[in-house]
Length: 197
Ligand SMILES: [Zn+2]
Image (tube, protein in one colour):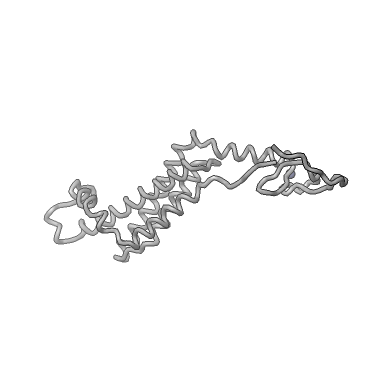
């Protein structure tokens, strides 16, 4: 592809590898994100990038990690709302953050889009769980519903929740939910490393 271009006749300049700082010839090595690195560093980066893409076997562990993180976030959020009687929207971001880090921890070295989807999905799961338990708490502890004998896991409560989830979300809630998903999405994002000539 490259056109023959006149290389200025200069003596081979010595330079150093951007990663290990070992001296190398200027035209040797590989370019990684525009930095010259020696062949052994380039091979190491390449191996790490390949390891990053091998998420298959770790995927279930990543999902479990994300679920655990999302649940911890959901519990923190629900406890704050129940204790203060006040719904603080930005705690939703914590749910996304913990879901994302749970996925990342479970994935080991893995990164990539499937893990990003898993992180965002687990964030949604955590947010729904938190919303449900907040609603359930207020319904169950409301003296006017005592005669209905509702518990946290009453089927009737699930139906009430599903019927009201849409209308109970304010534009602010949606904003925080969007932030939560973006937070979760970014954490296992693939590294932006380009290995070229
Ligand atoms: Zn090097």
